[in-house]
Image (cartoon, rainbow, N blue to C red; front, top):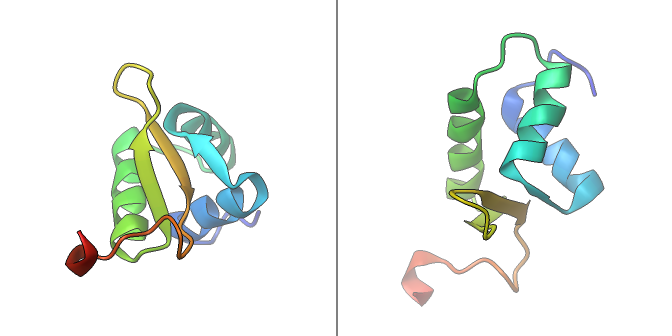
Length: 82
C-alpha cells in the first residue's frame, strides 16, 4: 500500500483484502504503514467511510470494540429504510 494515499483509501484497501476486521487490528495494520497515526484519525476516517456508505460498523462484542466490514447492498440500510 502506498503511504501517500489518504487514510480512507488505505482503510478501504485493507478491507478489500480482509472484508471484515476489528478496529484494534485495523489500527495496528495502519499504524505500521503510517507514521504518527492517532486513533482519532482512524475513527474520523471510519466515520467518513460509513457516511459515504462504503463500510458498515457494528459492535464486535469486545469492550467498546467495533467490527468493520465493507458495505454491500444486503448489509447497508439507507436512512429512509430504517
